[in-house]
Image (cartoon, rainbow, N blue to C red):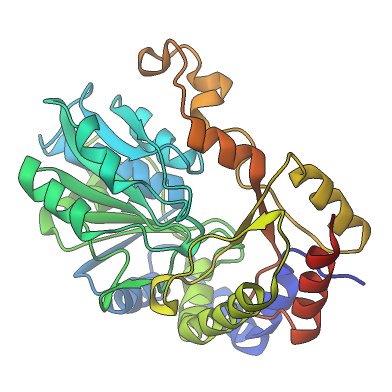
Length: 373
């Protein structure tokens, strides 16, 4: 048996003919940066997400960095201000904040949803808090009405890390359009993945969008005139063309992911395994399917599945506050104690999930998990 965690070759092959045509079109055009392909994708993705602006950039981390940097350039924030974010997330969420001299304030997730616990946020708000950053982790919508109310009550910006949730919605509104700005990653393994690195910012804020576009283009709003000390962080034409092809099929591909998830929810039955709270399909596009393995047997299950040809990945074995790079930061000295996040790091295992996983493979994954002891 061979059930890869995610076969990018198979995912690309789903729309291979159109992707090959798009790549050839760009190659033959002779225009490889900031051209028609970029403009088209930015327009189409903004329309899909439901925002006025989409600014393509080099990767998802840069998208987050530019949001915070732009708020500083516009005088909305300054270094030393605090941003509340989930403790359980990929480190990029923290890096975007700390890169700009802002202070991350980690809030524990709920054990049943794996998303930031909105009941813990208000206690973390201080006079220096300027924003809440939510992460739609694993493809699950992290937004709640309570979070929106807290942003209004304390006049806080709401920033979305939408790297894992392309196509997810909350009450008919797509994630990436709920907050004041959102960062998106198009890393190849994402639901909307490029053939290399890529990212974007979406927002309805005209001033913020103009600032971000300049920052990601060396700080320039017009050629050879530099308002900001920016960087080169642009989405190239080939990636934009590929993404525009795949965008047409995103909802269809997400629907298959939801069918895979339904199989897992309906048939996984093992007392050692806990599944996250099941959400309505509109609220979860299943970038990943995380399970929690009790009794210290997570690594044993990983090895068992690997021996039987099933690929799995641990997300994330070392939480950001436990990483060496943050060990001496003032906000993490003495080192934070975040027991729920640390428990998830010891118990989480992501099982195969993709838009091309077969029913046969799904059933075999379920059978193996149910037979594990």
